[in-house]
Length: 86
Image 1: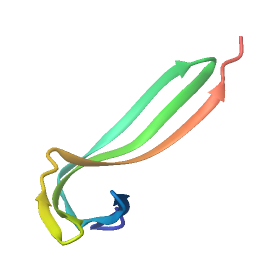
Image 2 (image 1 turned 90 degrees about the horizontal axis):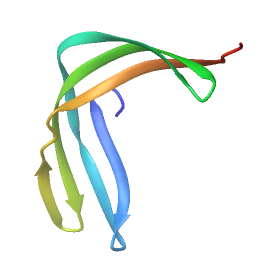
Image 3 (image 1 turned 90 degrees about the vertical axis):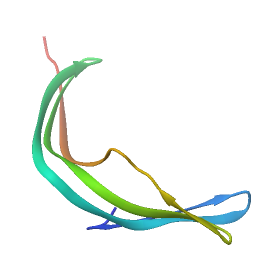
Image 4 (image 1 turned 180 degrees about the vertical axis):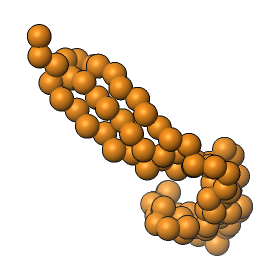
């Protein structure tokens, strides 16, 4: 997703598949803050979570259909890790 535009490409049975459309931000921005340890490392996660109202289509060869993506959301996160000493 870049800005409000959604676009992805792949191959399915040798034919190009395209997913394209728009995803408009909706609702309020929620703050994300989390800290946890895993395998001797300490992780700190901060950022935002926002719901989206997507309008996208799946195109394969000459076939196309509207996609339903509910709930759709976007995270904007920063993750830092450090070694736990002790």
